[in-house]
Image 1: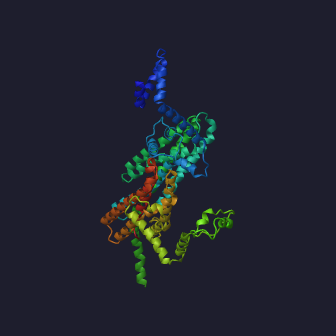
Image 2 (image 1 turned 30 degrees about the horizontal axis):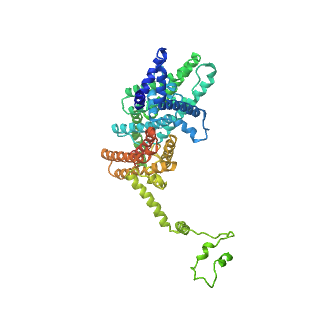
Image 3 (image 1 turned 135 degrees about the horizontal axis):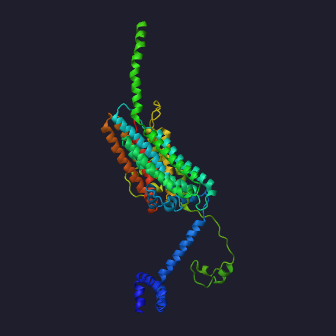
Length: 311
Length: 236
């Protein structure tokens, strides 16, 4: 009775002690008296908590199964809400996973855990588009400081161009990739292809590394800019390749090599295209017009003087 | 009915009875239908109020709406945790602010430079589609704010940036130079921070706590883009 009172007061500590003891008690046949008492004590004194835990676990499991079973139709708001079912910590974890790709770690299986979200890709693309336009404009400002003959303009049309390019890249290239992988599905037996949204997710998160790179491209040192570009491209490309490798390695080696090199090539094309369009090497452009201007006046002056003489 | 009253007493011998003494003995044998009209005095008051907004002068209507908009401007300029912006939302204020900002930011039609500032339509689209996107984002993340309430808050919180635009325009009338740019940069940064604080004060409570940063970051991006457009405005 005293033991029961003690157990009644310090419910959780004693229950955990008993639970730790019961495996030992169960294996030894000599301590038969302990096992029924231990079990009874667990049932009676912390029966509430232990039973509740079991029930809670079971109800959680059934709730999860029910959630997996019902899928709202694509015309309902709830369907799209399921793609934004992420917390701040999850988004940050996925960004970290894309920044530091490791050979064994598959981004989709390890970080996404088959729950792709659209929040990350959408807002990373929006941020990248605006950062590209803003830093491109800032380089023009800095160039004007060094060379006052350059005419500064806000260049607002670059926002539109950046937005369209980035969003088309993140939607059309994964579409092509997903289509291609599904077409080759017959060749692979073990690993199924990723869903379309998982592919979009991988591409969207892989573009995150370009955001700090673009900001650092403000530094007007050419070799540093190329170095940063190559670094960002290798990180981003590695993340894509490590994610695609488990799916592609069962295919013929030719197809695998062509696919992976196409993916990396398209990524490189995007990076280099952005570098050249938004961060144009300005001094070369603006040196040409002054040269033409200095060559004009002698030609202009000559016809004027005969004209003045004749009139 | 009459039988009971007559049988209760003799007219000659009894003392004068009180007036309704026999009423307690009366039993109503038939059901007397009770009908008629019940008029509630309040109803006529409400009718008067409804017709009065139709009959009032146009000045009264406009002044009432302007006062509501002005009251909300005050709530944005001195942000406190209050429900006024959310409870009586309206989109007049955001429209006035957006049109003012777009008119001031657009490049002049004379100068058809290819890479100039934004056109009127571009500013309008950025403000309204940006606000709609942020609202959809916040609702998809599970926030419990209604669509138009969120549009209202985001639109009204452009007020500090519109004030910054006016100040920048005035500052640009002076001679250009680094001091000019520093003053404009300082004003735009202060107003940008004010917009963010004001909108966060109203919008943050509607999100679940583990997703607040996810909902606030697009607001930050939105006001950053508008501030960038204001800062890079160069008169031609």
